[in-house]
Image 1 (spheres, helix red, strand yellow):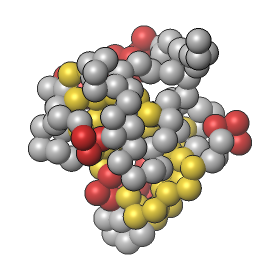
Image 2: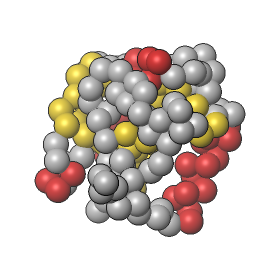
Image 3: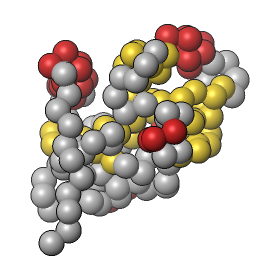
Length: 143
Protein backbone atom coordinates (compact mmCIF):
# COMPACT_ATOMS: atom_id res chain seq x y z
CA UNK A 1 0.00 0.00 0.00
CA UNK A 2 1.39 3.42 -0.95
CA UNK A 3 2.13 5.74 1.90
CA UNK A 4 0.11 8.92 1.95
CA UNK A 5 1.77 12.26 2.55
CA UNK A 6 0.95 13.77 5.93
CA UNK A 7 -1.99 16.14 5.96
CA UNK A 8 -1.34 19.36 7.82
CA UNK A 9 -4.27 21.13 9.36
CA UNK A 10 -4.36 24.80 8.57
CA UNK A 11 -4.94 27.34 11.31
CA UNK A 12 -8.61 28.30 11.57
CA UNK A 13 -8.10 31.84 10.24
CA UNK A 14 -6.15 30.56 7.23
CA UNK A 15 -8.77 27.90 6.51
CA UNK A 16 -11.53 30.55 6.69
CA UNK A 17 -9.66 32.78 4.21
CA UNK A 18 -9.44 29.92 1.71
CA UNK A 19 -13.11 29.03 2.26
CA UNK A 20 -14.17 32.65 1.67
CA UNK A 21 -12.37 32.69 -1.68
CA UNK A 22 -13.91 29.35 -2.67
CA UNK A 23 -17.36 30.59 -1.68
CA UNK A 24 -16.97 33.91 -3.54
CA UNK A 25 -16.28 31.95 -6.74
CA UNK A 26 -18.93 29.28 -6.02
CA UNK A 27 -16.40 26.46 -6.20
CA UNK A 28 -16.94 22.88 -5.17
CA UNK A 29 -14.40 20.31 -4.03
CA UNK A 30 -13.19 17.72 -6.51
CA UNK A 31 -14.86 14.33 -6.45
CA UNK A 32 -12.80 11.18 -5.97
CA UNK A 33 -13.26 10.36 -9.67
CA UNK A 34 -11.90 13.78 -10.70
CA UNK A 35 -8.98 13.71 -8.26
CA UNK A 36 -5.60 13.46 -9.97
CA UNK A 37 -6.77 14.86 -13.32
CA UNK A 38 -4.99 17.72 -15.04
CA UNK A 39 -6.76 21.08 -14.73
CA UNK A 40 -7.48 21.09 -18.48
CA UNK A 41 -9.60 17.95 -18.08
CA UNK A 42 -11.51 19.13 -15.00
CA UNK A 43 -14.92 20.78 -15.13
CA UNK A 44 -15.20 24.47 -14.39
CA UNK A 45 -16.11 25.56 -10.86
CA UNK A 46 -13.84 23.27 -8.84
CA UNK A 47 -10.92 23.49 -6.45
CA UNK A 48 -8.24 21.05 -5.40
CA UNK A 49 -4.63 20.75 -4.34
CA UNK A 50 -1.34 20.17 -6.16
CA UNK A 51 2.35 19.61 -5.52
CA UNK A 52 3.18 20.41 -9.15
CA UNK A 53 1.89 23.89 -9.97
CA UNK A 54 4.86 24.58 -12.23
CA UNK A 55 3.96 22.00 -14.86
CA UNK A 56 1.56 22.57 -17.72
CA UNK A 57 -1.90 21.12 -17.07
CA UNK A 58 -0.93 20.44 -13.44
CA UNK A 59 -3.00 17.81 -11.62
CA UNK A 60 -5.42 18.68 -8.84
CA UNK A 61 -6.28 16.30 -6.03
CA UNK A 62 -9.29 16.20 -3.73
CA UNK A 63 -7.29 16.11 -0.51
CA UNK A 64 -4.86 18.70 0.77
CA UNK A 65 -1.49 17.29 1.77
CA UNK A 66 1.40 18.92 3.55
CA UNK A 67 2.72 21.96 1.61
CA UNK A 68 0.47 21.51 -1.40
CA UNK A 69 -0.85 24.53 -3.30
CA UNK A 70 -4.55 25.15 -3.68
CA UNK A 71 -5.70 25.54 -7.26
CA UNK A 72 -9.05 26.81 -8.54
CA UNK A 73 -10.73 26.41 -11.90
CA UNK A 74 -13.33 29.16 -12.04
CA UNK A 75 -16.72 28.96 -13.74
CA UNK A 76 -15.25 30.76 -16.77
CA UNK A 77 -12.42 28.19 -17.06
CA UNK A 78 -9.68 30.46 -15.71
CA UNK A 79 -7.19 28.68 -13.45
CA UNK A 80 -5.64 30.37 -10.41
CA UNK A 81 -3.20 29.35 -7.69
CA UNK A 82 -3.58 30.50 -4.12
CA UNK A 83 -0.55 31.19 -2.02
CA UNK A 84 1.34 33.57 0.19
CA UNK A 85 3.76 36.37 -0.66
CA UNK A 86 5.73 38.78 1.45
CA UNK A 87 4.15 42.24 1.69
CA UNK A 88 6.92 43.58 -0.55
CA UNK A 89 6.38 40.95 -3.25
CA UNK A 90 2.61 41.38 -3.03
CA UNK A 91 3.05 45.09 -3.79
CA UNK A 92 5.34 44.24 -6.74
CA UNK A 93 2.84 41.64 -8.00
CA UNK A 94 -0.17 43.96 -7.73
CA UNK A 95 1.61 46.90 -9.38
CA UNK A 96 3.38 44.90 -12.12
CA UNK A 97 3.28 46.81 -15.40
CA UNK A 98 6.02 44.60 -16.83
CA UNK A 99 7.56 41.22 -16.01
CA UNK A 100 8.19 40.68 -12.29
CA UNK A 101 9.45 37.78 -10.17
CA UNK A 102 7.63 36.61 -7.04
CA UNK A 103 8.03 33.67 -4.66
CA UNK A 104 4.72 32.00 -3.80
CA UNK A 105 4.33 29.74 -0.77
CA UNK A 106 1.45 27.29 -0.23
CA UNK A 107 0.95 28.44 3.36
CA UNK A 108 2.29 31.32 5.47
CA UNK A 109 6.07 31.11 5.91
CA UNK A 110 8.28 33.62 7.69
CA UNK A 111 7.46 37.04 6.15
CA UNK A 112 5.25 35.53 3.43
CA UNK A 113 1.90 36.16 5.14
CA UNK A 114 -0.11 37.89 2.40
CA UNK A 115 -2.70 35.61 0.74
CA UNK A 116 -3.02 36.16 -3.02
CA UNK A 117 -4.63 34.52 -6.01
CA UNK A 118 -2.43 34.25 -9.08
CA UNK A 119 -4.22 33.73 -12.41
CA UNK A 120 -2.20 31.32 -14.53
CA UNK A 121 -2.79 33.69 -17.47
CA UNK A 122 -0.33 36.09 -15.77
CA UNK A 123 2.37 33.43 -15.30
CA UNK A 124 5.12 33.75 -17.90
CA UNK A 125 7.49 31.19 -16.39
CA UNK A 126 8.20 29.34 -13.19
CA UNK A 127 10.89 27.54 -11.26
CA UNK A 128 9.82 24.98 -8.70
CA UNK A 129 12.19 24.45 -5.78
CA UNK A 130 12.02 21.83 -3.08
CA UNK A 131 9.85 23.14 -0.27
CA UNK A 132 12.77 22.45 2.06
CA UNK A 133 14.83 25.23 0.44
CA UNK A 134 12.43 27.91 1.66
CA UNK A 135 12.38 29.64 -1.75
CA UNK A 136 8.77 28.87 -2.59
CA UNK A 137 7.52 28.66 -6.16
CA UNK A 138 9.35 31.28 -8.20
CA UNK A 139 6.97 32.81 -10.72
CA UNK A 140 7.67 35.29 -13.48
CA UNK A 141 4.43 37.22 -13.87
CA UNK A 142 3.24 39.80 -16.34
CA UNK A 143 0.72 42.60 -15.92
